Image (cartoon, rainbow, N blue to C red; front, side, top):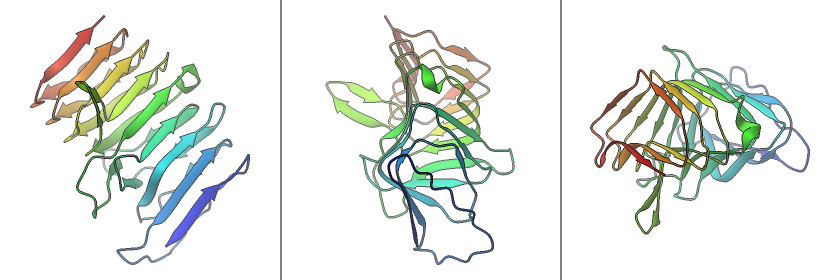
Length: 212
């Protein structure tokens, strides 16, 4: 389909209108995003391969109804700046695996206090998370090193682990559905997130693990 690549300090946020894509053609996005921009909903999935990073100081917005797909266990979205992924009840934003991939992609990684304006609402994240060995399982969404974004009306399902907070990952999680993940729904180490009004059910190792 289309390769959408950012190099250096450039920006790559095309506007897509009234295009028709075949089922096997998507928009592949890659690079380090250092400028503000919007991922429009082109009515075809974006395919993220390897690492796509939103750098400190950049604000990137995903439109309602947008779908992001990942095709290997190494694929991830890394957030170091501001990521605004606010869907609606009728048009959620979805992060899922490629239809040709049967494993789990790595996850969405928030690190550092540059992420603290980030928001995620009416979003579905599925088939994600990683086994790092030694009984260490990274969640579908991980917040570390003073990352404190907000999550509301987010559904985490069928992942290795749900939310993973480590080393002052002090996010806010409200009105979320965290269900049917292989390990814990929420895993907390040396962090103090705010967790309120969520539905946590059917997770293989339990609802919440809290460790200091």
